[in-house]
Image 1: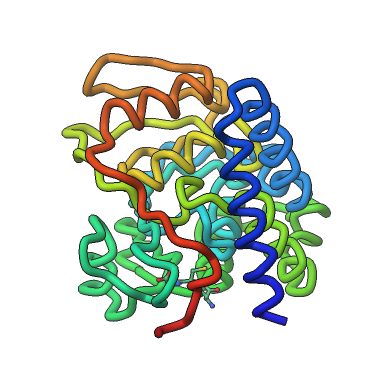
Image 2: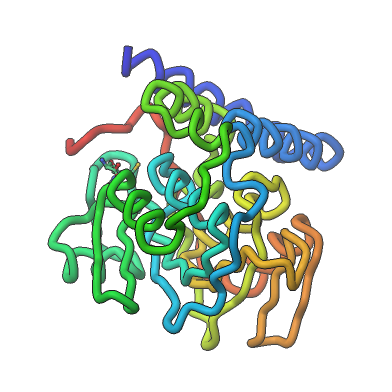
Length: 271
Ligand SMILES: N[C@@H](CCC(=O)N[C@@H](CS)C(=O)NCC(=O)O)C(=O)O
């Protein structure tokens, strides 16, 4: 069963890799797959419930875009409208689980929590830190969402069976290494970039994938101050509203060498 999934993923990786090189078709392909990756999750994380941007200290989340468990946590942050600093930890290789050597932020998680597993949340307001997506979600509701009603679609999307099915699509729809799966060596910007994002929004997801692949830390906002998909880079005084333009800018400005390129056929837990 797992082997079949990996063969399908490797096929899609090749196929999408080819499509991604065709200038007219590529943007359409991105739009459709990004749109479906939100729909498959029932646009969970849409319609913010509160605005807790007034939090004394910002939460910190170590995660990566290609990880379905991390998505669960971001959906909840988006729904509760909690601002968070994202430290992207894409994989260095598909071959080994929990591997780190050159990663920018993975070593921090290993030092702090003793495991290389994602998502990992730190809340400096309560001095709490934790692994396990379900524990993190429960914590966020308990700490920041008390008394608020969970929307129906959010509840369905969080059911274990539904999560299992949707996480298959998560990989099938966005299978390329530079979609927040494998790292690309980059320059570390001096100041944190800022992104306004609703979790299901295709534009915002495309930009998050690029920031993740490049291991660029950023403040993830969910508030109404800017439209979802707005990226600000205070290092160059730039504000961008287009996903294509932002992704292009990020790779041109910060990439220093090639993205790790591996086939899902080499995926293993630790070989
Ligand atoms: N039960 C954990 C599972 C977390 C998990 O397996 N995360 C994977 C990514 S999807 C991971 O950290 N893999 C190690 C790696 O990517 O090297 C949760 O719900 O958070």
